[in-house]
Image 1 (cartoon, one colour):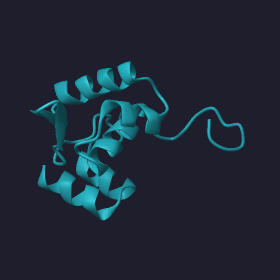
Image 2 (cartoon, one colour; image 1 turned 90 degrees about the vertical axis):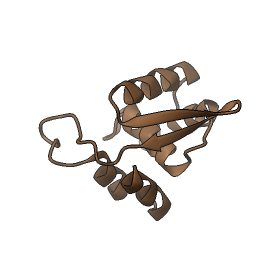
Image 3 (cartoon, helix red, strand yellow; image 1 turned 180 degrees about the vertical axis):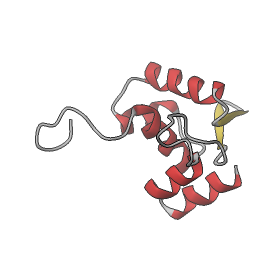
Length: 104
């Protein structure tokens, strides 16, 4: 893991994958896996779970996928349910990602 031998992070792999999709809606699964540090299979599972939860939509564009994030969706845990996916992305991302998440 990154720096100082710590074996955990504050954000889950679901959040890391979501941030990658927000930053680059046309990103390949392989690239997400490399950035997050997990397997392609794990990324596929997470993307499927995010899609099943209504947080993202996936559109086929030839051989690639394009991901759209529904920023208006509330976060899932009761402690943060009063915040949205878009707010989370806004907190942790650059301006381009924030605009895409707000548009939904």
